Image (cartoon, rainbow, N blue to C red; front, side, top):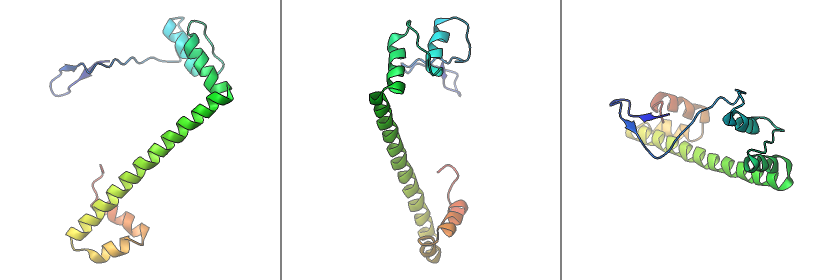
Amino acid sequence: MDRVIRETGKVVDNGSEEVYVNAKVKDGSEISELMEVFVEDAAYNSKFPVTSGSKRRYKETEEGQQVMCEIMEKIRNEGRIEGRIEGETRINTLNSILINLNRFDDLKRAATDKDFQMQLMIELLPEDM
């Protein structure tokens, strides 16, 4: 896959290379065999001992499962932090808009009435926030 600037058609080389494969294709190629290791639960392939072994360790050993749990917990926590920041930004933006419009009664009500606050967000905040 090439990265292209849509407006100019210029190919951009950012140093990354991406390859997309259909993991369901079983054509006997090495890529096909490697994809089977990723998608089939019990797949182990001696051509790919590191990948196969890592998969087995994470799926079948207590240590591997603990590592995966820690990774998932970290991802969940990062998502929660990101969600909180986005939510705080939306609330602060709404509050600023209400203040600028001198809608102080709406600001006061929105602080305690979540349904009203949501109505104001739909009314006043841009979609892409």
